[in-house]
Length: 173
Image 1: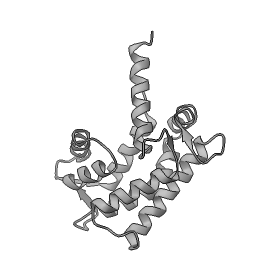
Image 2: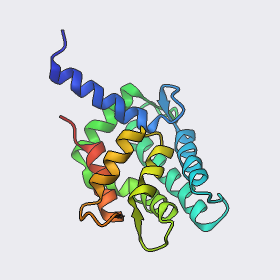
Image 3: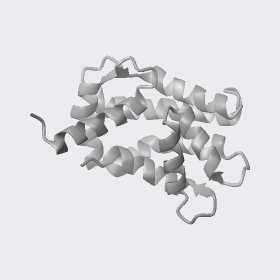
């Protein structure tokens, strides 16, 4: 029988894998990152052809290439759950800075899309919208957005969002 710690670890791995597997087909591929970009653009009424849309798709491609580079061990352009657990999580845990650099172009572009006021920070409700568009449950999206607002001013900074994203994917029990 699995220990409670083992069960918790598996639950967290499954959640992290599912957050990338946007279409739920059992593997992560380039299309999952394109779907995430499209969902975010649609949520904020931003076109794919504008500068912010192009930056988001470029960031999504860069993030896919980075993840595939560390986890797609058989080179089939798909990251299975086994590859994710065996490769990505172990490598990411040891390379938090590397993961941050892989994710930064996408996160920077996503932040620009969600910054509806154009002030360089994202309002807590817009952060919630962005997270929901990316498949996060409404309750979790609300909790995360409030937590990211570290100073309680109703706005989230990009460095705080990037650090939290990296911590989520690189720390496990």
